[in-house]
Image (cartoon, rainbow, N blue to C red; front, side):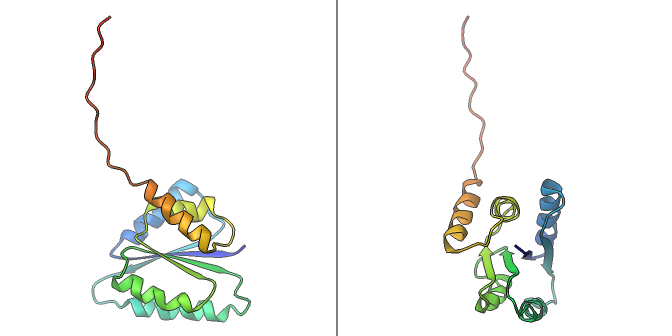
Length: 139
C-alpha cells in the first residue's frame, strides 16, 4: 500500500518530529513530509499544494495521513478541508507515539476502527513520571 505521511504544525515542531521519526524508524517505506507554518505564512497555501497532489491521483490508492499539532487551530482547520477525499485521514494533537504507530504498527489502510486505536495507543504513551522514595531494607 502506498502512503504519504504529512506532519503539519506551527513552528518547527513538524520538522523535529519528522527527524525523530526518521532516526527511530530508519528508512521508511512511506513518503514523510513536514509542513512548518511560520509567521506571515498561510496554512491554506500548503493545503492547495497538497490538494493538487491528492486530486491528481485518480486511482486514489495512495493514503494520505496528516498529523497536525493542535486540534481546532489554524493548521488543523486548514488540513481538515482535505477530508473530502476518502483517502485522507487527519489526526490532531500528534506526538511521536502516534507518528511511530502510523509508520511501523499500522501498515495497512487505516479505517475508522484503526484510527481510534491509534489515538488511544498514542495517549497511553503520555505519562507523568516521578521518583519513588527509596525504602531501605535492613539485612
